[in-house]
Length: 259
Image (cartoon, rainbow, N blue to C red; front, side):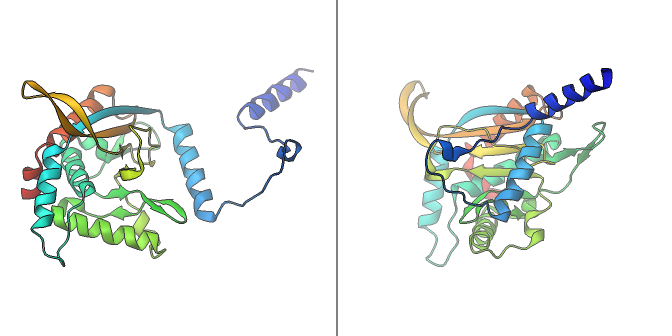
């Protein structure tokens, strides 16, 4: 009798961990469309990350008015065949500087949960929207690239992703990920960590907003950023300091261009 009770308890527990299935056709016409292989793999990995990693998201805003002025001036002075700088290239450059200053953010937690693998290389995953779904190719050794080289490498990698020309190695070895909604919109979101990485930065659409600046209320271009992090490795104070450093970097675009 005791064994039967325990068995029933286990069954109940199993059921609570799954979403119940329905015969949706009872309520109207239904079309069944299989998910492609890439979308299934993404779903499996994201579910595992969400279920096993304690996520916390820190939201912030960055004044990129000066950055956009500098970027457009640089691009206007670049000839037709030259590489144009994207706003994303500045964000990636700033992130690499932040990862150097806060090495825990560039780590992975050991499966034992008792130690960190601190990585002394900087490979930035870059989420790309493709016809096959969201793919995250990895820019390798970004700390060794100039701002212009980052823009070139990111553009080429995104093109290869959209054209289905990525190899297996192109999506492996990331230490930190940046995912940008760009012009698609949104004021902020909670990106899911690309485990075994311990953090991911979400970038939303920049908007003109009235803020206090030099003793007056003026319109400035504000960029929303959302950092999701693994709370087992990074606490709230460290996340806030990391984001504060990223903010300072993006508000000093000339320095990013010089490094």
